[in-house]
Amino acid sequence: MSSTSQAASTTTTKVTVGMVDYRFKLSLKTVHRGTVVFVVSNKGKVPHIFSIQRVHAVTPLMQPGQRHTLRVRFTKTGRYYYFCPVDNHVLYGMAGYLRVIA
Image 1 (cartoon, rainbow, N blue to C red):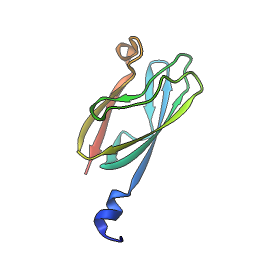
Image 2 (image 1 turned 120 degrees about the horizontal axis):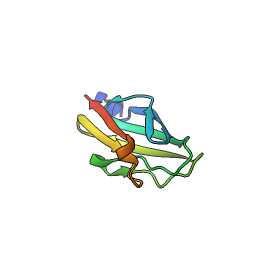
Image 3 (image 1 turned 90 degrees about the horizontal axis):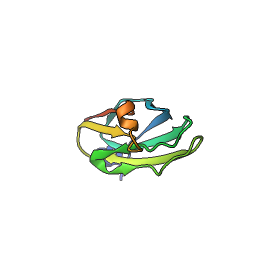
Image 4 (image 1 turned 180 degrees about the vertical axis):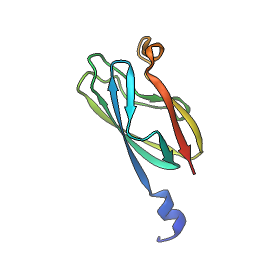
């Protein structure tokens, strides 16, 4: 139970995600492989969604003032596209990339 591989697999990173009208603000834009807990808050005036396309992770539609926790396990390194699929929010700049490293 104390093996290095098990210890590494239980490491969890926390990333706060602030959503304002047509922008995301992530506390970290680079994380290590493993479990990442995203604490997402809608600080804007209109509803938003936080979605990470490659891993099929998505929050529910969040009204202003709402908060949601999303737990994602990243097994591969690379760039992961995140965006807001509500209406045309992505066209206004509500998108970006999270980098996952070893």
